[in-house]
Length: 621
Image (tube, rainbow, N blue to C red; front, side, top):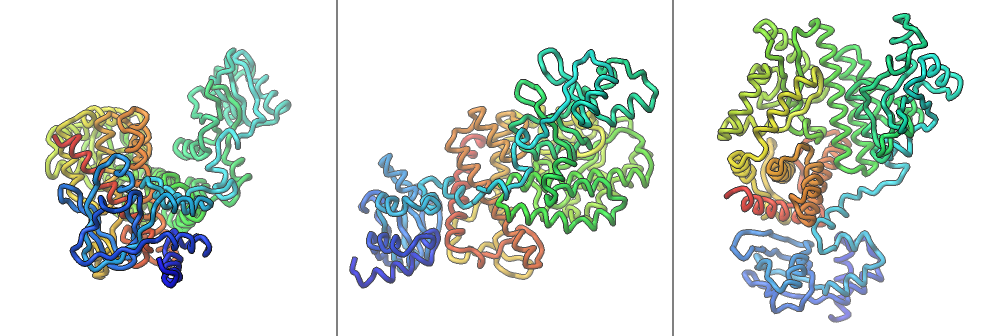
């Protein structure tokens, strides 16, 4: 390396991530380690003749990588970095892929070990250049947040709970418990525990009014006669967000916090959380539950967007963002069903409003449309179904007004086919699972994940048990779902401007949903169905597969890294679109990508391609 070339190399490194985070003195040290290689168009990079343990940076030109069987691995352009897999392969003395110059190409070669030494004091850069692709993707998520940033809802329930609680014994009278609550502890709630200290019930001041004072009940009866014994609780090591979810799902206001021995250690209430964190917009749910009309719900839509932007600004983990947006979606849906009943009168039979697709998986984003359905009791008559048709139309139109667009494929409760009795729904799943072809497979792909949102949960549980029975451990269904999952392969050939497809304005865009997100969802679902795992959320499925040893640690980490990165990329794109006054969607303008984003995308697409190939071997026969 001649001294004359050093300033030029330093200038180049200074302009590309992650080297742009390094001070000049470190860049000068790295530049001095660079070897310059030239490849004529059509010339291969003979990695076996190259010095061992090197990374390569493309200064100019383009290269193509192909697996040993000739299939495309990737195409790379200026500023791209490669060689990580070659370093892995070197340890096992094997060749991963061949590299060929598509144009006259100038490469910078860096020995990996000296490079690591040079950047050892800069952990953010070190992780961006880690050998493991999932570590590189994880570092790009930037999901580390401070206590102040992450807010109360992402802290442990035990750290936030009010520990000034009243503990009562089962033999105590209602009057004794009331005295304990009002005079001794001064709390609105008492926990009833057995002789082992295990929580068996709860009594609130509202329970006192409704169950004792209003009906004129004797205040000397044991508290166990009037207490609430069907409790929703959270463990002290769970997130406060879990308690918030229970409050919204079941319209309750007091959540006991217990230890792993089921002993009460504190209490969480909405009022307490609001007082401690008044700016947290998650309690939009409170406003939703009190909205008196569809117009009032529509007026809350900007607040939902503000919540989303706040979460993104705080670098909250992608799965938490999806959970929060899902909880808001659920709350709007639930309130619309209540308003519909106020308008139409009481429902003529038992029913369950079901979410499907990403809504069912707790993976809602700002561009999520409606995938929903209605489940009716088998007693429903033709007249009853007419009532539910009006009911479904009211709710679906209300959701559309609130920013949840109607499904283009009409997979909604307002469509007669998806407003059916239990027997019909069971027959749907039986046919789809036993003959998963063509139109049936499309419908199953929408409704393969379902979740109860409002109505009769016991009715839903009956259908859900049947659904799981027919879709789990079903080899024929797995093969059909695999064929469907392999119809769209990740765009391994991207480089330079990532030109993939054209939108309605004939502009070149990357559809992140089609290119990556659907692919990960489909592959993880295959593994979950094969293992009989009940979880529906993609991240929870991966964690459960790892716990059951249905995936090894390396595969699980790769899947998590890929899933989190592409999900975060979509959320960031939608957040930036809102800031620009544009529509939040899945279509990303590739002109806004830097070289590091391209590098991470290529890592993600390569790993997704690997997941698909592995699934083909596992489930394709």
